[in-house]
Image (cartoon, rainbow, N blue to C red):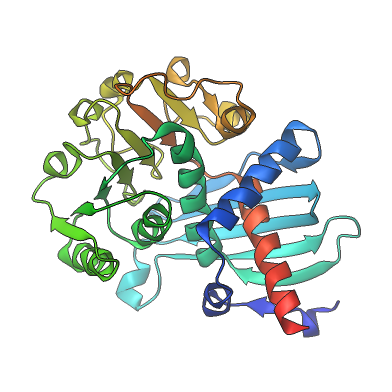
Length: 315
């Protein structure tokens, strides 16, 4: 394989592969189990925050089964929409895990959105009520849309509440929900959105750094929250309202200069949850949360699945 014929899988091509949420969750679960067996690896992600508000990060992961290595580079600039560009731009480079030969370049925005929703569903399958019918979205952008797809495919949702800074994304999310035959409510406040919801999905942009405004004590007993925004919008003093808090990767979290959640409140990570070494919700009244920073194994899992699906379709 040379640079001249290295395939590029665009977001449209990746979307056309028809990869279901259950497949995304299954391939991530597989690599988390492989990591427990020392057959898959990921490095704590490096990141850079520039004085002008840009955020740059990378992930690196590898596995023996399937035998691939993935490197993702991501760049976030909050001024991009003013230029007619997406705020986030990223790519994933997929290599053969044995030889290191490059195999494909994949659009990273699609990979990021879909694998993040898959991670949330992986946690929710074990921590949320299986009969959850109401989901609240705090933040209504790309991640909210991918989560709506994933959670509506997994839970018997009947209603969503949407709250965000602007009406454009909020209304688009509501229309998307209505197209799925769900009731959609444009909430007037964050508290109104989350009160009484079974599942809460917060995807507030990280730049500029959000001031905490979400109170975990607003959540009803038994509610599950997934925080795709490092939990930055959540009031730190309210996090004790959760009986169980799971992060995506404890090793990575220990290497970070600023923890997402007070370490003493963390029950474990996704690998622990999949392995059954930490308790799932112990009663219907326990609130639980998944707090996300970003784990490279999930990028690898989805990129490998998409590459193999596209390669098989081309034969």
